[in-house]
Length: 126
Image (spheres, rainbow, N blue to C red):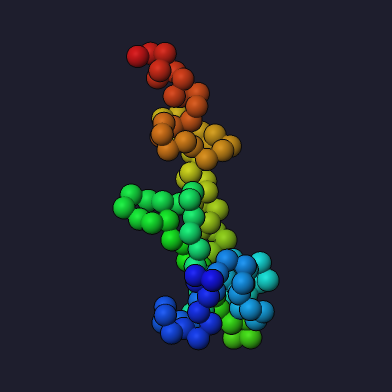
């Protein structure tokens, strides 16, 4: 197999092909789904695969996912009241139209920069 290097001789760290990672290792998303975080630990291994879908300009489409040890992972820190307040304030700002000043009830499209009612009114006026 092309990306199978469990000793890390070729890539510097243990490397596995897609869906071949051993038990006890997880990606950040998998850790988060379990209510965990890496907690400052180093990357234990990686998964490499080729993607035909992801090919930015001049790149070969090689994707990587870093793996962390489950036994060293820590619980996710809970949200504090200050963080909840900051998040609510940011979401309110995303929903408030700068033209009419009303809460649209949905995040404003960045392409318009205003609510859909104001965008329609400005399009008809032009």
